[in-house]
Every structure is written in C-alpha cells, then in structure tokens.
Amino acid sequence: MESGEPFQHAPVRLLRGARRVLLENWTGASTVPSRGLYPHQWSWDSAFIAIGLRHQSARRAQREMETLLGAQWGDGRIPHIVFNPAVPLDAYFPSPDFWRSSSAGAALGAPSAVETSGIVQPPVHALACRLVHLADPRASARHGFLTRVYPRLAAWHRYLTESRDLGGHGLVSVVHPWEPGMDNSPCWDAPLARVEPAPPGTFRRADLDHGAASDRPTDLDYGRYVRLAADYRDRGYRDDGPLPAFAVEDPGVNALLIASEHALAEIAAVLGADPAPHRTRARRLTAALVERLWDPAAGLFLCRDLRGGAEVGGGADIRGRGALIPERSAAGLLPLIVPDLPREIAATLIRTASGPHFGLGTSVRLVPSYDLLGRAFDPARYWRGPAWCNVNWLMERGLRQHGAVDRADALRSAVLDAAVSSGFAEYVDPYTGEARGTRDFGWTAALALDLLVASGEADAAPVLEAAESE
Image (cartoon, rainbow, N blue to C red):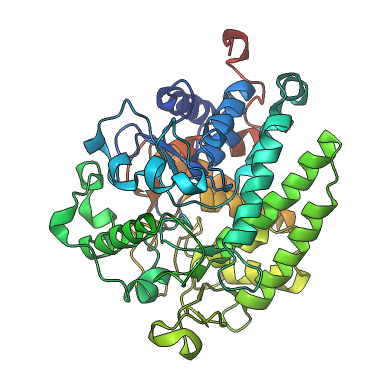
C-alpha cells in the first residue's frame, strides 16, 4: 500500500476479521496478543484489547481487566506479563522460571497463586476501564465492575508516582526498555550502551521462532534486556536504593498516566468518591511533564536519561536533572492525549507530527514509531520505524481532542485500511503498509474495531452478550 494510494477498507470485512481475531485469541479469562509469539497475558495489550472488546462483549472486556488486576502485587504494581501455567516454559522467554516472581518478589507482595514478570508497562488501564464501563454502564454497575477495579487502579497510580519517581522531580521513571512498551526504540541506544549484555549462551530467544530476525531486536540488544531484568530480579524488584543502570523518564508513559488519572477522576465521581485528588495529581504530572521533557527546539517531548549528563555521569548515584535524549520517537507526540496540555504545545505537536520527521498526511498516512529522518530509522525493525495501531489510536484521540478533526478523520481511515490490508499485523512499514511482525494481533484488531464503531461504519451493539453467562 503506497502512501498516496490508500487501500479502501470494507467495513464488513474489517468487522468480521477483527471479531474473529478477538474470538480466536480469547483464552476464557483474557486475550493473548497472538497465539504463537505472545502466548500469555500482557498488561497494556489487555488494556487496549479491552477497549475494542467492549464492542463485542462488555462483560468479557470487564473480565479482561479484572484478570489482569487480579495479578497485581501488594505494592501496587501491575506486572507486564501474567503467565498462563498451561503454556510450556519454552514457548516464551523470559519465562516464569526466569522472573521467579512469587519468590523474588514475595517481600513486595507478588501473588503466590500466579507467576508474573516483575516489571511494568504504560498505565493505560484506568482509561480502558472507564471506556469499558461506558460501553454498558448499567451492566457494569450491576456487576460492580468499577467498585472492584477502582481501589486497584488507585494503588497502581500510587506505586508509579511514589515508588517510581526515581528522579525526584514528579515524573514516573522506567527501569527497563520493555516498560515503556516501545521496547527497541533508538531512544534506548545510549542508556543501553552502559549495560553489559548477558552472555549469549545463557538464554534462548523464543521470539525468533515466530518472526523474522530482520523485524526483531538484535542479539546484542536482547542480551542487555536480559541483564537488566536479571539484575532487577536479583535485588528483589525493589525501587529504592541506588539508581539502576537504566533509569529513564519517558513522555509516553507519563502522558498515559495523566490521561488515566483524569479517567480515574471520572470513575471516582461515578462511585461517589472525591475526584479532586486525581485531578490535582494530573495537573502536577502535566506541569512536571512540560518542565522536564518538553523541548521547544525539537518540537516534541524527549526522554530524559537520569544517568546521563555530567551530573549523574560516571556511575554516580546523584538524583540530578540527567540529560534529554536527542532522539525523536512517537512517544514524544503522545502527550497530545493529555486533556489540559498547554495550547501552544499541542499546536506544536500537531505541526511536528505533520512535518518531515513524522510525515503524517504527507509522506506517510500513519505515524511511524521513530523519526523518518533519524540516524537509526528502519521501516521493518521492531519500534525503530514501523507504525503501530496503538500509537496511532492514541494519536487519533489526541488530534481529535485538540481540535485537529480533519487530521484525526484521515488517520482513523488510514488505521482501518492498514488493519485490513495487513491481516491485523502487529506493525507495518509506514511507507508501504507492508505487514511486519506477527499477524492476527490482538490490539490491532481491537483498536481497529473501536475506530470502526466510532466512525459509524459498524454497529456498537455487543454481539456476544446474549450467548454469555459469565
């Protein structure tokens, strides 16, 4: 699909295909991102999947989120993977015997009944739960959905804003490249260069059994991912003490927390609780986001390496300012989803998205994951250039929220076209729309379904409710 020759999606074909993927990836309690490559439950995948799944079954979408939240740790963290014990250990790496959550994380309240990873992913969950509730408010109230999830979501946000404010300036930090979700972004190249990789013979990559090596992270990068995860595990998944080797403030993670904090305020209001603390926290996070990560010269938000720059160089454990990472990624555009972002910053982000670095509406129809003109741009390799459905769903929402309705409409159409033509691929070449990664990917199907319903081209009525007795 050339950028100037859009594939015209057929609503019926897209609707049937998306529903088929969600049905086939459903396990009975949650949805796997894909049957082969990702055979367990992933944290932000489930949140995005629930957003689309609510149009197929509001009750099933509720269960998706409750299954995930049921694996929450005592300290409030929502782990990035909840492992299915029926899946063989060699089907995915790092597997449960690597993370050893129930033992290594026991002091922090890791669940004993289910194995999980020890790291986290972006906090889109409260936003997802609010949208799931809105799909059928009466049924949600009848089942007590918001009553059950609200305290867990509040604990999750407290964990992030208290335990993960590693820089001490009011923003959440990530301690592993897998945590911001954009695992292989060029933004991580400089911070990762400090990390000694795990020896190649000490682990076996299962991802290459299901995807082309040219689409996936390199062995060197993977070795560094393994080293960071093992080091975090070996210190009991604690967030206090010296700064870890990888400590970064990411704009996408913090923007999603702000959007979810606003959603949590709405949930609190529905339940008769006080929404004010959530709105206050959202304002403080927004101010810190602008203060710490906004770069007017770049025209977008940048990641901040807490161990970068002279203040924290040489391995010193100093809670200083760190240094901005001079790489443009889609994470720097995601603050468009923040409702009260300053108007001039929102306008600049829209111009940057449409400019030469991201080319939206000019050289490409979908927002790429990384700067089209960047030194490390690769249209095929995982998070180093391809376009992802979840990023573009968030961008469509942000554009629409800040008044760029025509651009949002065009982006929505482009996402729907790409979803159908790629076979609901995990990600696509931003120039050609060629499918990359795995196919029949959960959040691609779910978010395409959500956009299709929003466009008015599909019926919003759930199709499984009458048949479900959950």
